[in-house]
Amino acid sequence: MTVADATPLIALARIGAFSLLQDVLKALVIPPAVFDEVVTHGKGRPGAPEVQAALSAGWITKVAPAGRLPGPYGGMHAGEIEVLSLAKELGFPALLDEKIAAARADREHIIRFGTMTFFDWQRRWAIFQR
Image (cartoon, rainbow, N blue to C red; front, top):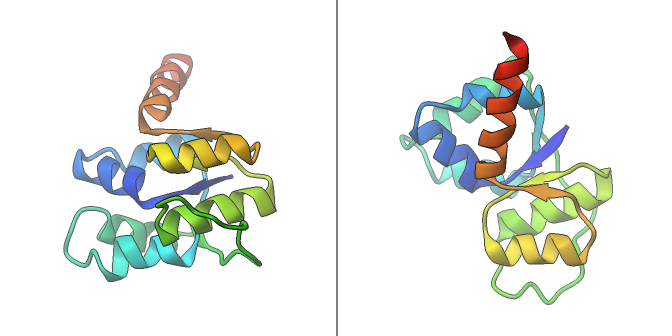
């Protein structure tokens, strides 16, 4: 399992590569703030229908963190705070691209990777699937 932030979900949907998340990672968790950013506020934009379909299919699960990482948050948005809080709480890696959130993940000893690393993994995964 991996806890995903909105930016990678939207980016992968925008380029038609959203399904690679299920192929490679099998299952994702998103916190409510990420759901709101992608689906509620992003209605009609890339990512919204894909996340809705993945939730219905069961390979994305929406989970609220029990608590929040202590502040200060240094410019992180609600989704990033919830992603890191949930990743730390569950012991899962975080999929996120924002530098501020990545730096905080490193300070909190949360394993994290971004969209470009995910593409590298996907490429390697595809080679082994042949």
